[in-house]
Length: 85
Image (tube, rainbow, N blue to C red):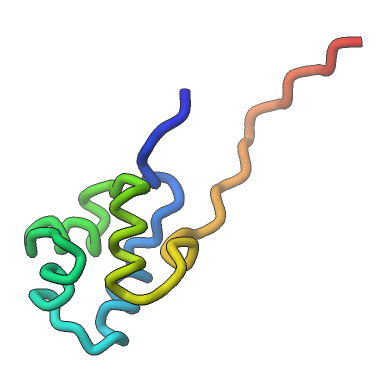
């Protein structure tokens, strides 16, 4: 089932690094991204999983591509289903 969250690939630490590098205070960033300070804190510490729409808003507030806030997904360890012949 598709999910509208970026839970498995969102780079929490990178959000914090990029926000600080942008020169925006947490409060300024919250206003720009349209979220509360407690929610930003939870995002930056891995306590919340953002929706894909929120990843877009966070990226827009930083002036970056949303993909820059994502890390590569972990490869699946499950055996692939055999191909039908």
